[in-house]
Length: 508
Image 1 (cartoon, rainbow, N blue to C red):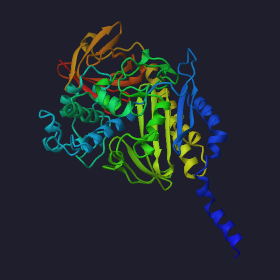
Image 2: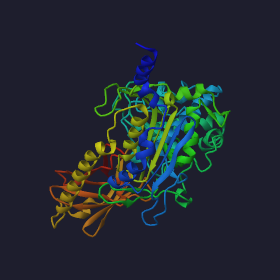
Image 3: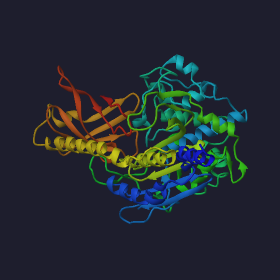
């Protein structure tokens, strides 16, 4: 074979690899139309995106609107809640403090908080900062969040209540996503640095990376300029504005607000081994510490994605994707979902921020971009994911319509006054149920303004409708003592987005 033919053959073999270094045609030719179609298909008001490649942003822009009434356009500086994308900031902060020998990630939490307890005494004795940062204390995903999310409870009170979270799994063996764990880990920072978690993140990360519009405090977000309005289509099928989350009490788990412009700095820092603008902000070993897998989430091949393994580091998921190692996290706030992803082997970073929490387009788009850059054959991920979402929504709306059709002139087993009063749950605290016409009204005392209405259907079931639609619509039941014919308890459900399991409240 001649040299020229050998070169041609080699180029043919290497063509897919060489193309990976170029901007994929999907980005240059199809990205805008793909996103615009996605906004329509998923009923998504607005989205902002950044793609960082080889040390610079190649896409940095917004699509759609921040608010469906004002029609203000989303741009690269529009602020969104990044929610659990906050967790890597917390993990990185604690890894940095370990590097500077201010603490060890293997320090026991009780060495900082002697009165801290978890449900199991052995776990209490052994639990470390690292355990809290990788979701391996044995609790169920989101366990306790109905009590903690947007509640009046302080960080100290939440830490005290964690002893009531009965694990469903085994310590250091079973993964269960835990927001209160991250908050507790973040509270170690004031113990060793005499400054708040918020201030430490600001001084050590946000300011050095010139993330000038970002803040570690979510309170007052609505008063800032160029801010996305939160929406959901859950439980109604129509876009409805929902309140901004107030969860600074869980700050180290979720409270950062940011823009894709600012997150481009964060991605460049991650991809440049801890450098930004030519300056070493943190040692690379600190970043590596957050990426080391501390617990396996799954080792089973995905049915739809080129992915086999997934684990969790310190506020960061890690997986394979078509032969590359990818790192990412998602974030879910009321009315806003996001993801931040980077692939060091390809010097590629992606951040996507959105303002409807009931859609999977933010993830479909991320996978579409990974496919384009990592040489995966084209499959329209949005169209692939959409049918299941549509089917789930259809089923939910049909179920709610069927419940509402059962609200007629039927009467409950006991006079409506018998259901009123104060009810208690050991973890949550108290609720008050009062009568309003033929309905009942619930006031959740652990929250400033969370209420719900109960309307009787039949067969001892009531329709629960939260005034904040984010919490959901459900059929629930009171338990009645047969002999005394008195109400003894009520079981209350909230949106899985908040917490999966129902709560039993016992009547005083």
